[in-house]
Length: 323
Image 1 (cartoon, rainbow, N blue to C red):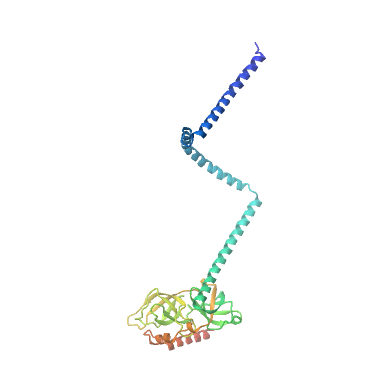
Image 2: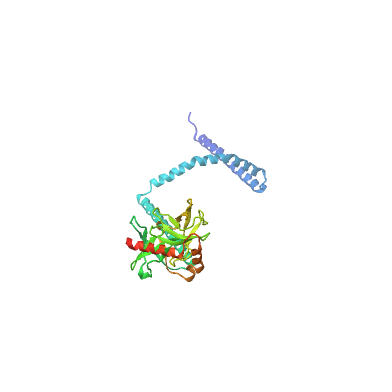
């Protein structure tokens, strides 16, 4: 027997009403709980229940986050893979430009630091000098020289000493209008009047084939130790007194020897230099005093004024003959 239309309508209405009632009840309960939650303060029962639920659910949230993170990263990767070729090319160009800019800034910072060191050296020693840049090195296996970008047009002349903030580099031996050749202190034809800073023992500093220096004419009983600084003595009137030349690396005294064998590590090497100072003239204070010369003449190590002059003259003649 078919159902009457009225009874179907009543059944549907009852189902709809039964579905609405729980929603109304839950809404009323929510409003009541929210009202109590607001009024009871932080120490109420509902706040305590909320804290417990939050504590219990925290590990679940952490695990969920850990599980979701790889998928988020994968999404980023997929996003990059699907980016247009034009976008990727632009990013690569920007990255290359940034790297180039960083390199330029690093180089500028290094140059500024070197120049600051030169200015400090010039100020400390009151040097009358001209700044120059090393533009070449010798390819001759028998000599150690560098070329600088200043010459006679800039007031540069033969025999002028050259230094940087680390120490003495060498001496000008040849000059043109726009360039000059500097013989390095490590060249075997080089000879510089020097002394041990601590004990004031005087000697002649010579270059060696292995790139080290040797301090000659220091007596076997002189007070010289490994680590002592070697500086210019000012005797001879070429180098200002007190410029750093190197550090004693070894001291050997043979039995019955008159002089000690002293090896010195140079303070500065050409490959570590770009900007240098050419000392154009000496002040009265920068030259060795009469007392310094007298002390050198009387010292037991035998580095008399006459010996120093002879050594420097021999070095200059040897250089001229080699040219």
